[in-house]
Image (cartoon, rainbow, N blue to C red; front, side, top):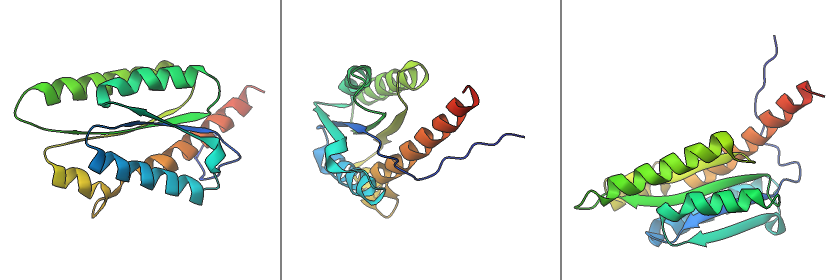
Length: 158
């Protein structure tokens, strides 16, 4: 039986991060947690490309463009969509999720989904370094695991 398990080994990987500026109080903490965790995993600052976009709606397009450059081995998408008084929340969440899911399946590199979708700012902050951890750091770990698993699967075809 073949089993593949992702390891938290950087192996000199190049990482892209696309982060929304909207709700910056939250997204700046996600980015900080992500970059700090990547450093702990051995990823040098020079191997990290950060792309800032206005909001979560813009994340999928820039993830695609960054992945298509061939200059990164994987991408982490970070954002925070917080429910307001209108249906706008639902549309933004759906667009970001659908766009990133399509890239996860069909894009050139692995993509980690770190877009928070919460009912209020308190919930978002709890997931951006508060009592519920930091989704940015979790995505850094997840990306390294995905890259390791994909390398193992690729060895099967060699």
